[in-house]
Image (cartoon, rainbow, N blue to C red; front, top):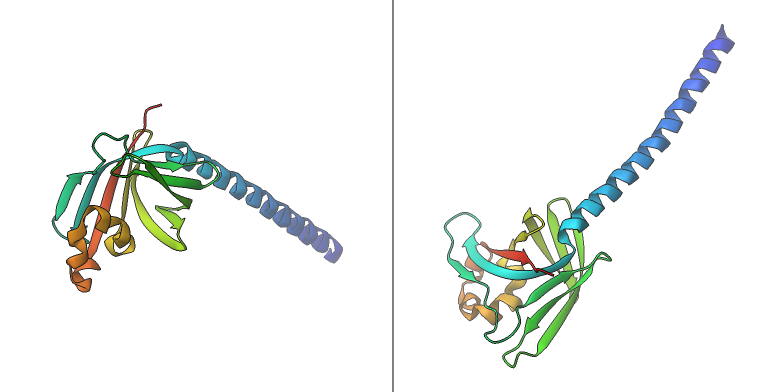
Length: 173
């Protein structure tokens, strides 16, 4: 009887270990499927369309179309399948300046690594046509002051409470 119980226990243990290997394979497949789903909607070229600046809680302080340079092509946020990208911005003379970055997606957030900095944005909405990101204004101050110089004059305690919401539209091919 003891031998039978021992054999039964051994079989049960082997089943448990083989199931855990299957679970790992299923987890890997699920992660791969999720990455493919995310990439399907994020990879490509995105045109910034609208910017809103507001406190974390409260009314919008600024809501404006994205300030593309008149007479130039539109600025573009490009994200590729290899998790690299660039923000292409046109100068006053319509020459293009590329700011390369690496991007990473985690549940509900996108991180952009550039110039030894990381900008983490909340992924508010995404689809085949639009992408809406939300991030702390203070984290993007060097970028924001180019377009909205008055933001740099705000006291630090007010600036720390501001968030920026940027809406992008998928560039038509």
